[in-house]
Length: 266
Image (cartoon, rainbow, N blue to C red):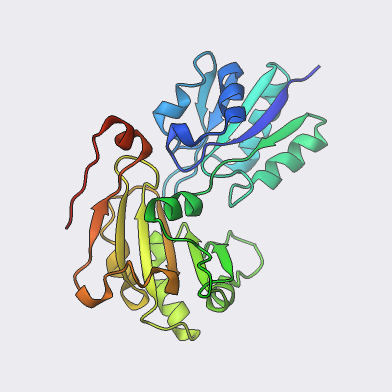
């Protein structure tokens, strides 16, 4: 007999944004293979489960995907409930298909538990709809990254054609992203917002224009970053004050409940 592997979305970071299903599975987990950026507060929910970090971070040593796949299968032959805990949603830039495909071939039961992806958490904090009526009728989530041997990534054409875009895993390529989009015809004046640590108490936002994306992205402190761009952000981007870049700490649900809202500008 084998156990079941649950691919669970850890969401953008705040523990109280997990789904009820995710919490219940974590509480029953025998072992949890988790991404590097999953907050400790979320891991505490798996009080009785062994924790194994198998995260991938740009520019750092990371666990090979094939090795992760085998670890999950081996664990399922020893434990009843195995959790693969992924940041955001497992089905969005989470390589879930590779793990599901491997486990299915091994005859191991699998289940996916969705999570809130960073673009939705960032939009909630900003209070700006991704699809503002009369302004944005199309939204895309892309990443400029492409693995070795993968087919060409046509993210530039997709972003250029969309009204609003969320760019994942792009902070380290901010200059290249800006240059590529402008060269493809995107206006250099397109408003951009860079969100760092969406949903967490240390969340910050930086506003600017596409032509200055490299400068805006460089203001972050190294936390997980999402880039948003589109005309829906023009009212909030304080364009008239440019080139001064504005940032502010965002209140979280926890801070609001406890009355400890923080704010600041730089």
